[in-house]
Image (cartoon, helix red, strand yellow):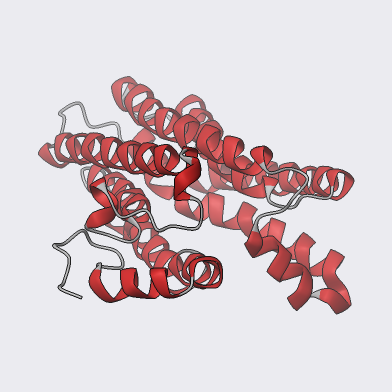
Length: 262
């Protein structure tokens, strides 16, 4: 099956799925569930590409396997976070309710459909790999798998360290600044972005794989300028005040690095 046809099928499926998800979110009055679905959906798309594409069978198994493992880990992590506070909504979505108060339902529906579009665009490296019929394994594919493993381990450790910190009652209102969080204010975001770099590197071993540079570039922009660090830090400053401002003054925002002196 050709690339345009597979993308068309994927786009249609994602649009319908996220329209139904929007109805569910309205019913339970928690729009934060889109984060969970968005994460899980990458695994579903990778499997779809593996089934529909006609590339080398090894790639059609390996790439979906990597994506599914990452997708399940991230989606389950977000499920615990989002549903652990249900019916209370994540702060980002409470802010959207305020910002879009005049026409909230329509704006949120468009937001959900935008998530569907982003899924198809960001999953492009998965499809390009699954379409590659070349018998020989490219060194960039091996490099991509290695980088993916390092990034997944880093993200898992960062999330586990933050969760362990939050479980201690005496840490309520304090800033997590141990482990990886001593070297970056957002090590989870950094390693998440590194996973997308790994997908890009893997895809560069396939024809037209360089096009998928749009994926890590888009994720970097979103994390640094839109829904990642800016919103998270606004919320952290509101809840932790001067303690978090001191953390901002000494600790790298994104790339792990040695702390500065206060």
